[in-house]
Image 1: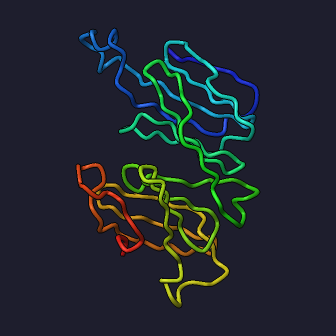
Image 2 (image 1 turned 120 degrees about the vertical axis):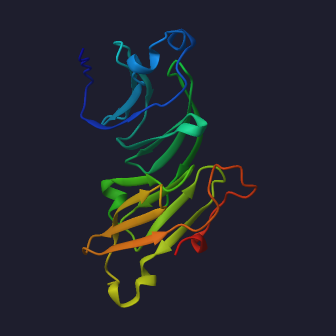
Length: 212
């Protein structure tokens, strides 16, 4: 059956929360056919809400800015939130949907993202975020090491106009291609050649030299 939830303010983003189901759900023989993972959604007013298909709907956080992006770091059971004020916060998520605030950083960006917020952020590997910040490069943030680096459009040489800015990013996790679209209509593609993240490598950190 269809569930409906209503909160004040426009819903700006949502993400499924892929965590191990509770013990009472796992005991059911057909749980894989009937189980629907819970989800979070955020609003223009800064509300963070946890809900599921059983009718539960709980406000778990109230932030002081609109919520632009939500991502779920499945391997660490973390909810990642980016607000209009460009704060990125990680929350540890319990099996009951309760969240505990962890690391918070202020994203230092310039350009249109300062006023309009971020509209394109993707996973570019386990724990590695690629961000389109309307600048002349793609920003990367490693949530495991808190390190960051950039990929500049300047490597495109004559195809690149100095006034152009990165507007959108997409990542293919199978072939490890990162596609970047610009405000000027340019599409650039990089491929990741570094160590496979999350496969037990001693050094899983990456850098701009891992992209060609």
